[in-house]
Image (cartoon, rainbow, N blue to C red):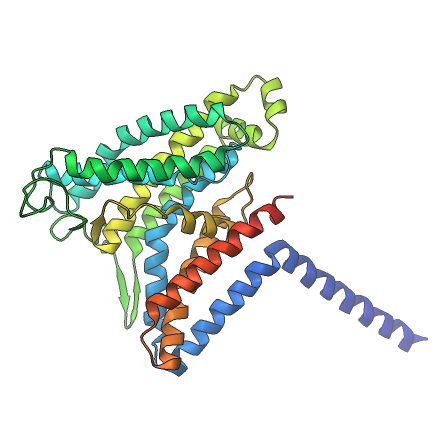
Length: 363
């Protein structure tokens, strides 16, 4: 009789353990678990194909620090029910205007970065206000319209970068003296302004402490805002607009605020990206920058009306880790320089996966 009881207890413990595992997998998400295991496999394989593990981890952390703020820019609009911000190029353009004006006005060193944020803010508020007004007029079709708004803005700025009266010799075309170059070096300006601050170097491991801290401060600020009265109202609008209206919330105003916040974060995000990358890229460069940010937050577990800071962190690390590690490991295995081809295939493949998962996870 005692043996039967022991066996029953073991079966119950086993069932309980399996139930816990299944619950954990369901909570984390099977697709994210598969991507995480694949990324872990890439890190494990790296030393065996001649790629230093800590160097690759450093590259992943660097790319995470460059892109995390752009992914964070998705959170306010998702919370307000405006959906995924495919109009992120508007914020990016505001950031580019701030960066180029900061150089034009003669600022140098890390000061250029902070002045770029200051100068980009009025543009971000203006663009965000107009963008929010438009999205309030077409409720239900925000993501479709936002895509064309972003594309149109980039195309318009392709002309404006040639026509705006910039004169800095470090930015304009040398043979004409007018019009901005396609790529502008940030040497002497805000190159590594954040990534180089308090950087920790341990052997081959390099941690961009300043950039990670900056992202942490912004993420903490967004988290704190979402727990304020206005932030709670924003979440309520995204969850149930009719209930929010019945509670006296001005839906259009809250939605417009979320769009302005998202646009401003996009402006700051591109400046963080530039300081790590070392260049300002104009003209068609912002054209598809919304897609990796959208994909990263979806891979992190967000839906079209629910997102968290955790989704931003997990999604950005997984997306950038796969994009960084896969070309390196596969190149080393096949001994051919196909890094750019593999990176395009992997990044676009993950974008397709994330966008097709959107409708599934949001049901």
